[in-house]
Length: 228
Image (cartoon, rainbow, N blue to C red):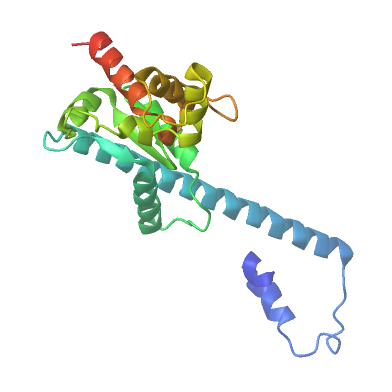
């Protein structure tokens, strides 16, 4: 405590070999005052350190925003960012600036801060990953995706469980042991059931619950209603 208070006189007295031989006395009021001084110094140091850390976090975040602006202005790349990569850059920069990063950076809060700085930046969920992309870059990104423009012949049957196809076919046409194929109506109904099946209310669909018919219908609607 003496070294924390930087009280050289008290430190010299307390470091003596035998305080009892010197007839040192314990004063309760003085020790309370000593503890109060120590507490005030600890609070002051904590405030200074907290202010320093906030400044470092602010500098790191401003540099992250500058990085996004620089990569966005580059015409050769499409500005699509993984939130995990941005968190890694942010954490590494905080470490370089000398702040404590023993705790994990809250990715959700960082995402909200980034989105609030860019009104035209949207966050998307892809599996477990969060992806940030600018609205103007989504179109060019889709154009670069290679697509044959066709679906394979067996894609409809492969996207739906065989048991569901058999059930729908049985409801439509009854039992038929000689039937080796399914009508298009059976395939369409089974895919719609697969697409609409969910355990709980959700605003989005699972990737493996999006059969070809629904994907094709979504593409047609997008091509018809999209802004040119």
